[in-house]
Amino acid sequence: MPEALAAALATPGLVWIIATTVAAGAVYGFAGFGAALIFMPVATAFVPAQLAISSMALIALSSMVTVVPRAWRKADKGVVLTMVGVALCTIPLGVAVLRVADPDMLRWAVIALAAATLAALLSGWRRTGEDTVPARLAVAGASGFCGGAVGLNGPILVLFQLSGRMRVETMRANTIVFLSVTGLAVLPAMMLLGLFDAAALALGLLLAVPYGAGTLLGRALFDPARERLYRSVAYAVIGAAIVLGLPLWS
Image 1 (cartoon, rainbow, N blue to C red):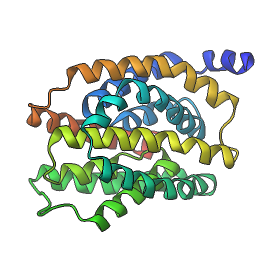
Image 2 (tube, helix red, strand yellow):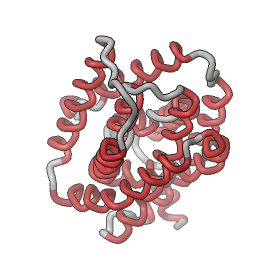
Image 3 (cartoon, one colour):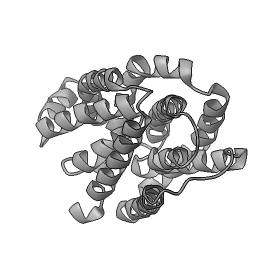
Image 4 (cartoon, rainbow, N blue to C red):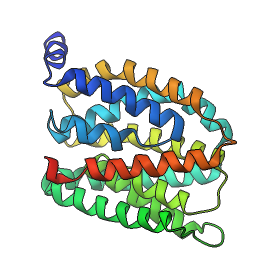
């Protein structure tokens, strides 16, 4: 472990990765999502995708302490637990695909879906009626798969929720609980498939503190009464992540 920690401290671009981790935590604490969207494009510029994904999964541990307890009190628990259960079934499938598929092709697919839905939302489109159980289950399954395959379990879920009529405070709480639990759940699947090692453990632990500090900052900035600001920040984060996540930059 000391050797792995020394290697983590010598990670190329570590200063940039830490700065990005703080920013990712702040956005997550405020919006309830966006950490992986911000972290992954920068981290994968310096370290292999598998190391970035496993490290991101590990730093989700700090979210369980800093933002999940408060979010759990405001979340729709029945909905969240059902969606988490479905996602847990599809995460291993995504991790299995990570081992064999072209990661750039997967990223193109996620980005194309996110961009198309974001464009619809910006045009003023909203889903009518209440969310159906099949729709929630499909979104949860797709989110879990994408989390395991490319480390992005948020875009599909968040865009689905932003297109609905749910109150911002409940939407944010549901998202925080879902993404924190499913993000952490990527770890066992990666361990079983041999994709998690001492290097990922050391880097994840190193980044957990700055990430946790960022989430506390973001949580303090959130105001449930300012829905327009929340949606504007959410759209901006997704848009920036789409651009930064393009495989063209790799």
